[in-house]
Length: 290
Ligand code: C2E
Ligand code: MG
Ligand code: MG
Ligand code: MG
Image (cartoon, rainbow, N blue to C red):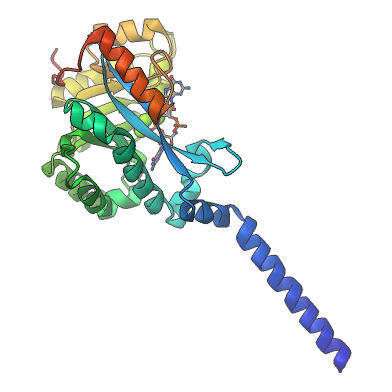
């Protein structure tokens, strides 16, 4: 009888150890630990006003900085973060980082903005608006300096998203549809959405001026934006010809490696200083005109 009992205990012990090890080493466990240890940092990609070359803002892009110094790109952990609900804590850390990193610069220049990416769940529930309100209180940063980016993929709950965007806008935030063109939004649908800007997905910028079947999508998006009085931001601009084409077409803003990659906060602030010396302070956003 003793022998089987010992065996059972040994199996139980081994099982528990494996379970504990997995908890510790599973991607989910690692991500949860990273959230607890606040290993997320924001990098900032400059957003350029095409007509003047001025830096008018930045998009905050999350990076996971592992204790060994390695930076993990968001594509590798955002899906898991969304699946596990850890995205909420990551978003909150991003909001904290934005205010800490860029607060002084935003207060010093009320025309500078920073865009934050919002996940589907927060679009649905509006939870993030409370977090933002609390974080902004007493900072002197205006709510219209905080843009919210929502992807069409993030419109899981249409009713909830609509309510959240309307509320965000009523509070003064500026709403941009991210990766525009890759989702399903038609004119009808867009017309009903309380939004301010469209960010044209990089895949459509890549083919500008080529023979690709989608090379004219940008023109259609611009016509749509004009119709709905929306600002247009081009994503992933890498070549001068693309910037020339976009400028001539009337696209107001762009971001991409042609101007700068996403930068750590201090490097972004240095970029702004150099840019300002060259082009002067950023001016107000002018609605798209034909
Ligand atoms: P996104 O919001 O569409 O961000 C633009 C992505 O394109 C960024 O990649 C940026 O570094 C990259 N990019 C910008 N310009 C160029 C260019 O000229 N060439 C190329 N090849 N790439 C360029 P990143 O930082 O890896 O972010 C990937 C995606 O992860 C983002 O796409 C966004 O959907 C998501 N993401 C990033 N930060 C956050 C966050 O804080 N919260 C949430 N929920 N999602 C985030
Ligand atoms: Mg974005
Ligand atoms: Mg985007
Ligand atoms: Mg994109």
